[in-house]
Image (tube, rainbow, N blue to C red; front, side, top):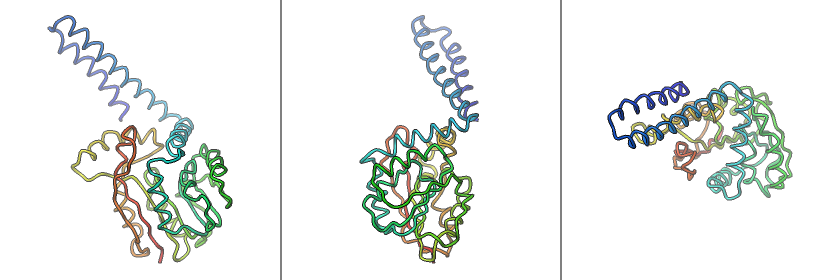
Length: 274
């Protein structure tokens, strides 16, 4: 739909320019024609680019993996202090299960940790594995790290076998948040924790919500299925009374305006399994 809208807008602009400047000064007409042509070409180009991504899963996955690696593996990134302080407050230890670890974005928070015994990353995008292992070496992590190329909905691990389940910037792109949370609950021991940090839907009626509605369909394509969701409500309903929510904080993330302004509304939290 968004592709059709982009191409249709390009044609409407072209037609509208000719109609509106038909009786205008010659130079005004020429200048407006050039501007309209350039804008139309950009819109058509973006539409064709998105069309290619929609029809090529591997290219989309590879491009997304490259984008995440470029954005998230920098030292002193805008989110590093927030994510690492969250893990510190959660007292990460024992056997870790991370859903959607990407290129190992959270590994920088585990440097010098002696409390982590084992780590399993559940990541359906095969293009992340190499970067994850490079990041492990870069950070000098000594605990075992295992890469499982599965969707979070298809998780197959022994029940009650992990101490901590981590989800950062992954619930936006899974098919079913409820199923992933149920799998995390099953995998956790009694007293185990889910530690999460996600971008969320802005409040209805705000400019940010309008902006999210505008760019959301585009990021759904280039972001490998990323959707803007009311994750605070979804998480609370999914965990029910089987977890004690030790923290649930809404905040504005210090993300760059381009291309991640729409993702600034965030939540972070810790939930402990009873």
